[in-house]
Every structure is written in C-alpha cells, then in structure tokens.
Image 1 (cartoon, rainbow, N blue to C red):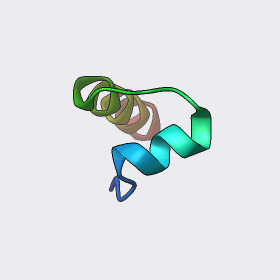
Image 2 (cartoon, helix red, strand yellow):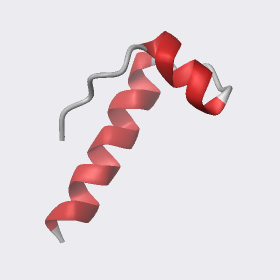
Image 3 (cartoon, rainbow, N blue to C red):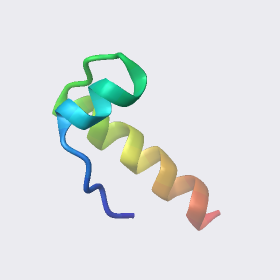
Length: 36
C-alpha cells in the first residue's frame, strides 16, 4: 500500500491530527488485513 496523502490532507479528510507513527501503524494494519 502506498500512502500519498500529506498529514494536512489527512487532517482535512477526517478532522483528526494523526502523527506519523499513527499513520504508519494504520498502514501496517491495512497491509496485514490485505495479506490475510
């Protein structure tokens, strides 16, 4: 999975300030789900 949105774009989408660590965690969860 490729993440191309910037933190600002993500904030506009969901209204939540996500840290880089949180974004990486969510990306990892999504990758794990897609593999199973």
